[in-house]
Image 1 (cartoon, rainbow, N blue to C red):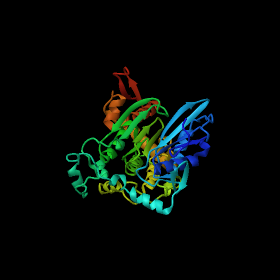
Image 2 (image 1 turned 90 degrees about the vertical axis):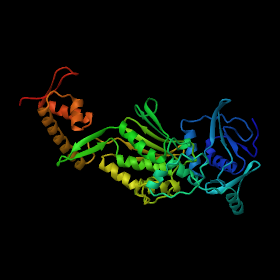
Image 3 (image 1 turned 30 degrees about the vertical axis):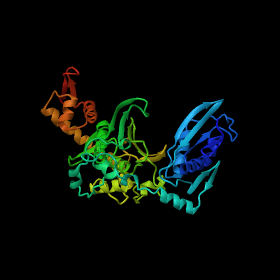
Image 4 (image 1 turned 120 degrees about the vertical axis):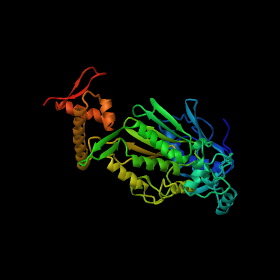
Length: 426
């Protein structure tokens, strides 16, 4: 094992996580380097044992306390009677990198705090525009949808920026980190995949396609109010999902090589967006937050021009309102492994408050009356046929028919495949 040097440092355990973060930031401001956790200063093994969440917790701490955020390569290896963890960073393209609001430089085996003059000099040398305002270097001669640009009234120059390319590309994205993924899973984890899809179109199209995918995988119930108006209640609030998807697309960190992910489980739905919240925002205050801090100003400008988002910072309040109207609890917001996650819980079909419950009950009563009228006019129809004719979700129709059978108002006659429902003689 090599000795400590300008690009190698040893730490006995993750209990020294603050020192590890400082060393990684110092490496990133110089020539890159590696911290090896599980070795003492003299290179002897500390017989480190890695816990289930040790690496994940450290990555969260690293990304919460570096600016720009560092994304190191992490490799866990067996060593002697324990393990070692090699954490490596390359020289940053966005210097200086701050750790705990200070900039460090690696000099020999030490991490030294940089002076104000050093910071200014380094910042000028590595000054670069935001990711979405960098020039797109690919062949864009035929890839940009000019008609769409004109339709939304957006003005662009001859130089295509990355944000413009991502939003207006006609076909598949060449910048693969901007692609999104969605999947349907059995149970409460990702061990059993039922369906999976990649979205490689423009960001404007992803905004629509991701929500459409979700709607194909979740259930919708139709209830009728006292005026026989249809009301659609989905497993999850559609307007809130739309807001969260657009937030993920517009505000994600496009320098992170990860993808936006939609994970649909039996009783929850998660939206993962690479990158953490701006340091000015706190998760605990999100439902009341009205401040807009766009990470990608060019992409935000295009989405605003297209009428997809607004720029008043009221998105979290609209999410809360949509959840309440759809009878869902407020989503959980959290940060893990460098991603911002929104977790929705499935709608409570029993009703959370009396007002919503009464309205649903009235809709059910109205619905079963319509079913009776339909069966009276068209006897012998099966559940799928009745559901399709009345534009009601099959599961909702099954509940209505079950209620009517329990009340002896209808009965089923014939084989399961060929029979149908008839009105009882009462």
